[in-house]
Every structure is written in C-alpha cells, then in structure tokens.
Length: 289
Ligand SMILES: [Zn+2]
Image 1 (tube, rainbow, N blue to C red):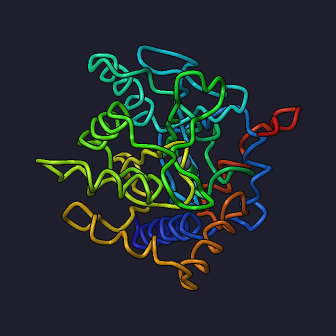
Image 2: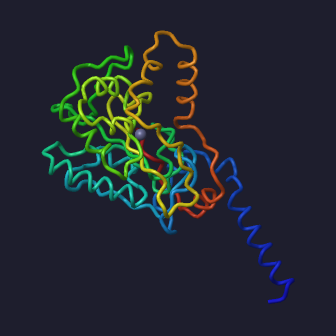
Image 3: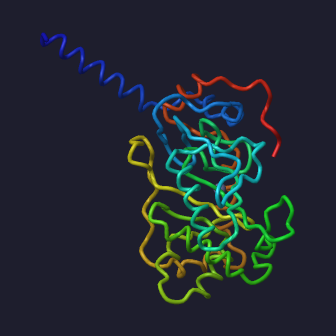
C-alpha cells in the first residue's frame, strides 16, 4: 500500500469514527418515532448510549409468559431487551419458582429498537431496564401500590415474599441496581438483619410505588453503552433522610427535572439515528397506556 493510500485509509477511519460519535439529528429523539417501530434492528445485539438517551440494536423479544414470569401488558409491545436482559428475566422467573415465590409480573422492558418512549419512563431506552410489578392477590390486572405517593408512607407492612423477591433479584451478580420507592427502601433498611450488602443495590427513586425497576450494567458486547457511576459501598441506608425532609426546594426541583424527562425527546448518539432510519414503522399508532 502506498503512503498516500495508507493515509487515505486512516482518514476514512477517522471520518467514520467522527460520524459515529456525532449526535443523531434532533428529530431522531422523538418518542413517537421510536414507539412506531415494530421490529428490532438487524445488527448484532448492542446497547447504545445512555439509559435515558440511547437505543438498542439486535433486541431479543420476551415471550408473553414463561416459567415464573408473565408480561402484564403485552399489547404495549415493550417486551424487547438486550439478550442479556431477556435471559435474566427468564432465569429470575425460574429462581422465584424454585424459591416458592409468586411468578414475576413483568411490566415494560423496551421498545423494539429501544429509544425514548412517549409515556411512563425516562430510561428503558437501551434494553437494560425492566419493571416488575408488585401484585397483591385480588388486584386484578393492576399493579398493587405499596406506598401512598401523596404522603410518602407505606400503605402497610412490606410482605415477606416481596422482601425475599427483592433480595433474590438484588443478590444476582448480573444485576447492577434496583429502583424502589424511598419508603420501601427505608422499610427494608429497618427490617433486614444479617448480611445487608445487597441493600446497597436497592436505590430510592421517585414513583416506583407499585413496581420495582431492575437495571443491568453495560454488557461487554456494547462498547457504546454509557455506564452509570458505580454505587457507593455499603447498604445506602444513611442517605434516605434527603427523601423524607419536610418541604425541600432542592428535592422539589430535582423531581420536576426528572418528571420533565419522562416521555420527553432525548438527545441520542449517532448510531441511534441510523437505527431509527433503517426501521419500518408500523401502520397503526402505538396503543395508549
Ligand atoms: Zn422502570
């Protein structure tokens, strides 16, 4: 290869890298465009970008039911995840059955190509997040709330089966973290004796009064996946006071910022723009939540 040809190669590689690192055009971040996607991307499985600003290629689909789990609202079509997430849900299902716990009611995973959703979430964009409902006997087709969001108080004591389910999931070495309502975390902090290390993975967050949220770390096959800051060591029980301070302007402002991101357009990395452009949107609009 001549020196000129070699430098051309280097140049085109550099151009390629720049094109990939560039942001996707702003209209690529519109939730409706992602919600209209009906099929996963055909590339190798890859989570791309941030949990709250990214997409998913080569998604796997979770079946409507399996051993120890069932999808609560299959009509939403948010049953797509990175294959590591789909494998995790299946295996957790088998493990709750083995532990004589009730089957896991699975809420949203991600849309077929991930991306921002028009309703319900700020994250769930890269196929690495899943919601699992709490469900009381007799709650019909609804998730069962454990917390009164108006008062931030538990509606009753945390059922032992729920605590065992949270522990089983948090102890799974593949799981990066869980999100629960702060009142649930506080109850666990007060109740769990012995080895409390798993409590550190259980993070307080807004909402999450009727479901918990399981997050995987960036998988090894996803170099463009942006990891979150690692969790601090310990059980995390010492940082709950912030959530229960009486009137608190900083907390109110944070909450508003978070709520503004739910269902909002997202800034996405370049590969997400291409993944969206290659997709074939379905004819009908996505069902209302
Ligand atoms: Zn969630």
